[in-house]
Picture 1 (cartoon, protein in one colour):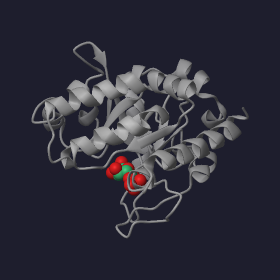
Picture 2 (cartoon, protein in one colour):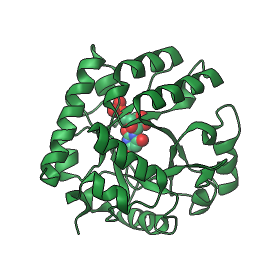
Picture 3 (cartoon, rainbow, N blue to C red):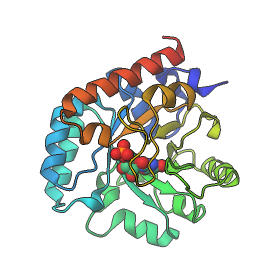
Length: 261
Ligand code: BMP
């Protein structure tokens, strides 16, 4: 069966990872398959933007290591917004070291990512130790992983064999796996996993630094994305509140067409 023809409601039942289940549920309930990548360097700007657009997104993606005034209070406020608007938090840390180092990077240091992020991104490059290092729950709270199987950037070194091995290793960690960061429908088939696809913008086809953009329609209808990641298309827009609605509607319309709803 083609996972992309199933509704998010059906797929919620097929998911093993509790974060994947929650995400499918949020998407179906809020009618949003939009993840906002808040690539801003000030906590007040991030919190302000999320206050204005939080009702339209299912997931927020952070890069905490670009923030100049990171604090515990920021994390508290971010979690409050997530609760208030009903979205989850993905820290796009792209862990890519030996298991022991990743385990420290996940739980220690300035950011203590494992304490507050519902899910994180991980590269398969180091081998499965990187997945062993990230526990499926922290203090009894469920966590998840989006494994990078492909990248959106021009000239990236990922090969078809790398993709295949990545999907194979993920199958050993059903409790932990929320989904894949990837660009193509054929990359994986498990309907309980979520395809998270970055490189989405309406205005432009690239950024001069290797990013490649596709339209919401293309990534949902042709490329099999379940959640689209939009950063600068919304964050750098003159009117983010208006843009977030435009992206959300275009992405949801494409999903509805895909599942024939
Ligand atoms: P933008 O829409 O502004 O290009 O942002 C895309 C976001 O998605 C960035 O935060 C980037 O780190 C992330 N990303 C990506 O662009 N391509 C990938 O393959 C994987 C990513 O995580």
